[in-house]
Amino acid sequence: MTMTKTQAHWRRVALSGWLGLALCGGVAVARAVTSEVKAPSRRLSSEEREVLGRMAAEAEPHWRRRSMHSFPGDHWSQDDDFGASERGWVMTEARRRDVPVTDVFDAIDTELRASSPVTTPRKATASPCKPRPFYD
Image (cartoon, rainbow, N blue to C red; front, side, top):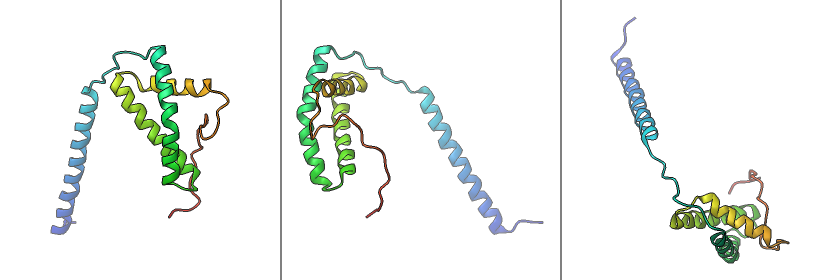
């Protein structure tokens, strides 16, 4: 059985696609293997942890209000948006201070649990990941 010109053309196209995919994959693997992860140069001191915890506690009402304004009546999305605001702040502080992100989150957690009982609008729990019953 011989191939027609069209079949030969599409076979070359498919082969080119697979070759391109393999090349991109090879470049990605090579870059991942040869990359260097810069470790943070230091850890937060206990005084810095307290300061960061208080800073986050002071910023939290603003994040919550902004989330409630952006997603009125949708508590799950409010919590999700709040988490994004908090994460952005944490990443910025960790980079600025050259410390691990986990240190900043730990400072927030320590401050939150030290100020018991936790009163509204603050929460010491995470919202469950759940699918929406409808999509707009």
